[in-house]
Amino acid sequence: MTFEDKEPTKEERQKLDIGLKLGENAHKEITDKGIEFYKEKLKLVRERTLEWFEEMEDKWLDEVSSFGPNHKANNYFRWFHVFEDELNHRGQIRLIRNHMNREKEVQLDLILQFN
Image 1 (cartoon, rainbow, N blue to C red):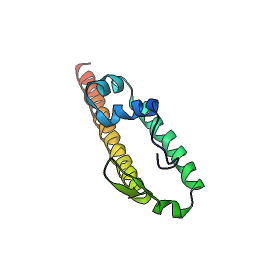
Image 2 (image 1 turned 60 degrees about the vertical axis):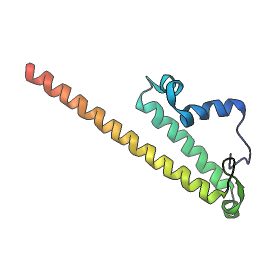
Image 3 (image 1 turned 45 degrees about the vertical axis):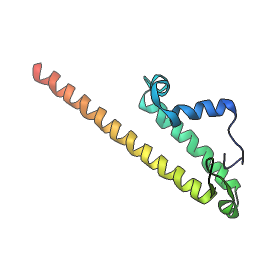
Image 4 (image 1 turned 120 degrees about the horizontal axis):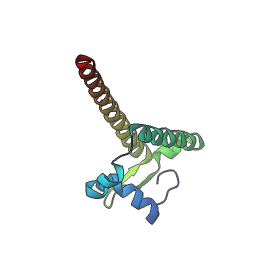
């Protein structure tokens, strides 16, 4: 939206709504996808984002546009929040991955105890 200065298409919006609205549809959509799937998605989006940033001039950060139905914001403000969200999600992935690894260790310990 910020790089192309446009609203998402109907198809793009449907993809975005899964993560924005969550609920039962999101649960159905995201269940059974391994952590590597999401890490790869983050990697690809990050690569494309860095490509876009290389094309933009610094003054682009000061450009103001709509931010929701009743607000305006510059691109610096908008992208600060994108980065903040990415860091949060990376932390969530790390937490889940560590939890899954601990569960595997516990299962392995149980197997070894009974053998």
